[in-house]
Length: 244
Length: 278
Image (tube, rainbow over all chains, first blue to last red):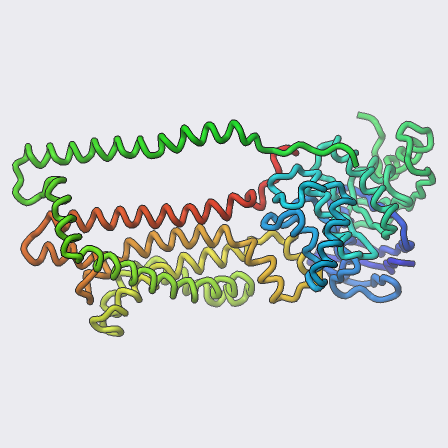
């Protein structure tokens, strides 16, 4: 297993947030974690990233216990995580500070192209739309060549059209870069569109209700019977009837 | 990849608006100044006062001062004092504000003291300044230092406290040490706030200067005012001194605002999400 959670529990003061999470994520897997707001899914991601220590249990990556943040696994936030004082170039090269200049420039150019921001190298984030800022953040993460990406509702602040575009972008990049991805979202549709496996969590205190394998090949047809079946299965698991 | 989302600025519309705007920015205040000067001249004439000078008398006074090169010396002395005190406040205030903003226990220990000292007018320190520094340049410089120190500390401290946590988390994630985090993330993140603090501090320093120069020194614009009154009730010189203080204060503030504009123009306010998405 690339990332292994073993009996992870977490509490903030008297509040129990996570209960006995055991989950293995394989190398190169795209794993989505869905659950209602406040179920502790972001906390779980922060524990895996080394930003929080669990109350009990452990997380290992490649068999090594996680104790602190590490450049080999990068956390991606909503697009507000980009640094407003740096240009697109500066942001993407941010993590490459100990690299020789020309190597860094080359890496930055490569990832600017990968996320489709050619021509915006010298732009500041304020000149970019939300979707473009999100691309900058993904490129900044990928540029340090991590082997795991943690994405915490990365498209939550984008409009629905941009969000759809960004999903197919992310899938394209994931296939090209072969990273292990842990993707937290409260959007069930999003999880079924993206993931190899969807981990469905309960309301707080969060525990795993079910792990659903999404056995549909990419590109996924969002009106196929299997897609709707799996989507409704997850809706049902969370306790929502899929109707408005 | 394909679709590229639109840029957000419509620069053409903006620049036309700005041209009109900047013409007005000079014309309107000029009209106000003319009206005030006219009212002032008329009021002096009509009241028949022998003490209060007309605008023309004040203009003559300024010319005379300039001819005797006293004006330049006084302005230079005042500016030197203000910058000495102000720079000392920056050198001490910014690092101290960073420490207080970064280490919460330190702030809990020291902040109450700062908040207690802050409302004391710097002028209240005058008697102590004279005891400590005697009749010398150091006394007014110390007062200006005190006046600008607290706003600078508070701006730096609040700035550091309010750096968005995700910037810090990202910095740590990319393997920065605390020192690197300070230089590469915290410092640029707080820069806009610090510059606002610096401008406020400078405004206070300039106000305090005049009072500070009424003690302990025999040059400067503050001294000019008190000396003109004491030695022969030269109210034309008093008003001339006031005008010079006002004009120089305005120029310096304009300069500081320009710096502020350059820094904040480079980026939108960090917490403000891009308009196009909402």
